[in-house]
Image (cartoon, rainbow, N blue to C red):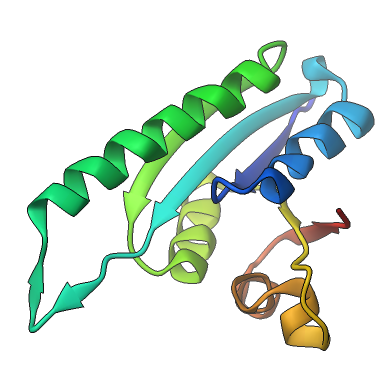
Length: 136
């Protein structure tokens, strides 16, 4: 039996968690391998990153991933946390995983780039696999 590798970026908003609900409604656990990622963009002030911010961000990101894994506990799931530009990291990690599908939730803003979100627009342009954009 062939399984689909599905890559799901989450950002901590309730909206981003809708991607996991979409997967539960549309894919059976036996046919899917999930990889959930949380990317934290670093902010540098005068070329210096704040070490406490880094520690806190990673702790929060890992807690978010644990919460997400609990929501899809019936699925084979891997999770990762990383720092970087979200679009770049999503495309790079999905490529390294050999993802068949990336599932993301659209933005609530108006206009095409705003409607799907600038990060989602970046992934749409650069991903080498299918991208599913889930409405709220």
